[in-house]
Structure formats: C-alpha cells, structure tokens
Amino acid sequence: MGVDRAVHVVTERRLDQEVEPLATAKLLKAIVEKEKPDLVIVGKQAIDGDNATTGPMLAELLDWPCASFASKLDVGDAEATVERETDAGMETVTIHLPGLVTADLRLNTPRYPKLPNIMKAKKKPLDTFDANDLGVVDLDSIANVVTDVKAPPPRPPGITVSNVDDLIDKLKNEAKVIASPGD
Image (cartoon, rainbow, N blue to C red; front, side, top):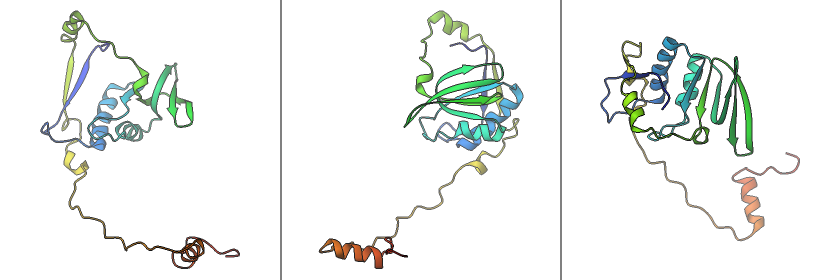
C-alpha cells in the first residue's frame, strides 16, 4: 500500500503481553533516530489500550512538534499544515519539520491492494531490529504494574432536606461550598 520497505521491532514479550505506550515510544524513538525522517505519521490511538498517547510521547522524546488528530495534511518544504476536528469545529495547525502527526480516521481512505501488488509487497525489504539492540532493554521497568486493587471507602448516607432554605443553610454552613455575601 505504498511503502518501499518496512521495519519490524522484536521484543522478548509474548503475544499476550502488552507493550506500554512509553516503551513503544522509546522503541520508535530509536528507529526515528536511525532513519532520520522529516515527518513521522502515527495512528491516533491503538485499539487495545485506546490510550492515544504513544504519538505525543514520541514527539516529546524527540523534542519535535506534534499535531494530533489530523484529518487533512499538507506537507511543504519546512512545515506541515494539519487540519483537525475539535468539539468547536475545524482547527488548522502548522508545525515546523521535523515533526510528528497523529492521524485521525478521516485522513485517508485505505486502498485495498490487488493480488499482484500483494505479491510485489512480499519482495520489499523488511529490516528487523531487536529491542535490546535499540537500547530499550528493560520493557518491564517502563510498564505499568497493578499491585493492588481496592474498593473506594463507603460514602456516608445522604440526607433529605425539607425546603430550599434548609438546603442553602447546609451548603453554606456544613459543606461550605456556598460563600455568604461579604465573605
């Protein structure tokens, strides 16, 4: 689907063990430092952890600008302009290159490859790197480890007030969430 080569990073993790976003960002940082691209485009978020943090973490580790949730991307000589959807509408952001962009689902419509192109893709180079060789050796020290799970303490029971004046009095004097005039 348009690549000339691929990179595969091998870890000692089993397939059922998650690599945390920070560890993934550190592995990608090592690859970016080897490859020296002007622009890194990553997905917005993974479907397993749904964190949406790996791209911004990678940008921070590289000390690069980051434009997230891109729905449109225009790349120039020294900068990239990203259009992104926000709750308030569309927003346009320009970053200097080298930089990182996280892609929203609207950025691209995937093309489905035809069989001859799939066969051609099998002949493309695949560079394999070991995580240890990239300097990211202890993925467990980067991982979040759940050591204990406890229920929150029980809440005291609620109270019923007979009228609005009692409610206001309790909010002012007991809960102290309403200030009296002049306080």
